[in-house]
Image 1 (cartoon, one colour):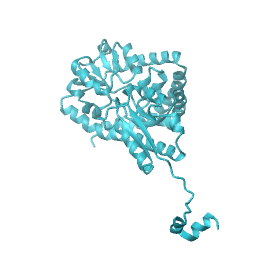
Image 2 (cartoon, rainbow, N blue to C red):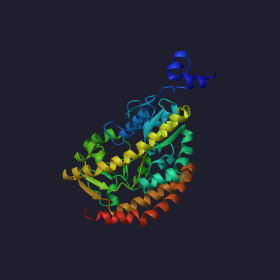
Image 3 (spheres, rainbow, N blue to C red):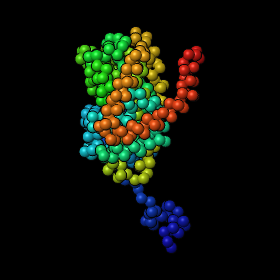
Length: 360
């Protein structure tokens, strides 16, 4: 009698008593470490990695566990790509534009000035060439990217003095999230500073910074920026829809079973969706509280927006000349964006403009 007949006639109790084990191969336990670029105090952007890790553990029945480490615990917040390349960790949760200094093309994986909004970024990444082109580029760094969240359009930052014209940026020491917007702001006369979020408050308080951008009302309020810089400007034209990413070391990814690879893909998708929804849910209440605390919430002038757009286009042309990777991906992004702008002009934009003027 063969194995199948024994199991059929004896039942599981009989099989165990007879010492005949079913032909089932148990999944080996997998333990990974994830280095975040964000402080643990930010339950939104840092919290995206927690949402992801909990989902991986639940979907694997506890057989695949990923521990999440805040920026600075295992490596510097801006050192996670180096850590991945060296195999120090298997994963990172970060914003690609932090690594603009390695190659300008990194910024295209998250946000560039006057780029996509969050929905348009999703469309390009998922149903355009975005993810394909970015992962082809990341292969040179031994990493693969998965969407890991989005903040939606960000605010334009906190300022110790009013900013009325482009000339007001001259000599302004400003913390900015990436090297690309720093180059744009330099053309406007600002002095960009690259400082992790956890160090910005003290720098503003001491006056070593004149201004700083971070994300939006909820995160900014938690970091207390309104206490040391009373002017809060909008919009953050350099981050219309910045994608946060999960980066995975390619060797580690290739070592996974098909089941665990599918779990990674599902858990990153969950964390990605959850982050944007969380920001949209939490930002309105935080903005009300900031206004009640006497924060001066002001729009950038048309002159500032126009000058910023012009400066951005100049930097993009310079990048075309110095990075073939940037030139290839940027051209594809802009082609996709033109159609997105056309479509949004007819439905989304008109609807949003109308609703913003109504009382509901």
